Length: 391
Image 1 (cartoon, rainbow, N blue to C red):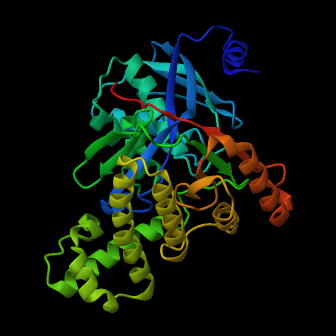
Image 2 (cartoon, rainbow, N blue to C red):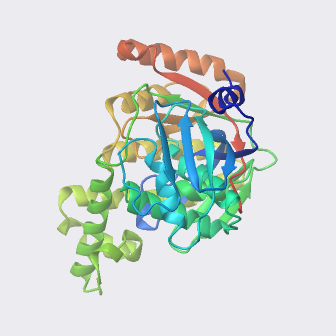
């Protein structure tokens, strides 16, 4: 049953409004946004959709087509306590907005994610979808920067994941057929069009069959390792290191890292080595994209995947296997796992003329290694899309 029919059956009325936020992939710039690094991204033409009807009394009622149960509360409720279920995200959106804006109206809604969860910034997409609806019904008009800030605040302070700006920025700023190039230190944004001579490509999203959660995973540990390394390097170099929570690897010049890297603990050295190398890959990748060299761009994506596995040390066994399979599959320009790498999905830039062959090869090799996931893994082809934009 499609979402509109399901809405009518659930609420006995037709929806009047729609909110949508695309998923995103990050070909280059993995694991560096929380350290104010350089990132790239595409918004996908698949994402999170919600149909809804405003309510005048501030009541919010939401059900999901992907998860059981529902949630109901009022936007003015004094306590919006987390229950550690999917419905936390809508309560968090209300909690974030009402710090700065009066909320009087709510909505009844039905939510649907159009791809399997994992590695596509689905949490940010869900949050941005709810923020759109709450802003619409309460006549709030947020700039792109403000919208990103609200989404980040919720994920850090309500959901409990120490995220960077990558996910929200891709889902807000991106433009169809353009590469987003973002400096997360100063929020400088460039949207670089595809070169006229660039070969066509589609983005394969390969769901491993294993979902992931960032909160409670090793994600926050990796962030702390990076910040600890930055703090230590500042100390070794006699730099003013201020507060730990305000310290980022981007604050430390690469020359300082090269001079003092042997003084770092082994794990901190690996994380910092990934950070500086990934920033260089982003710069090279942007230049390759500008000249339409998709093969060079894709090779850098493969190198990013290798560094994520061996230096940043993330990636489940399933995602590592997918990376190895992609490396040896003809028709793939480049690929890596998508997102933080704690289960979830991988992404690949694929020659459209060979996409069926690519999908068949990946599935055959992957299921041979993980037969238990035969009914769960899936491969989806996507194009690029515009982001949410202004509200």
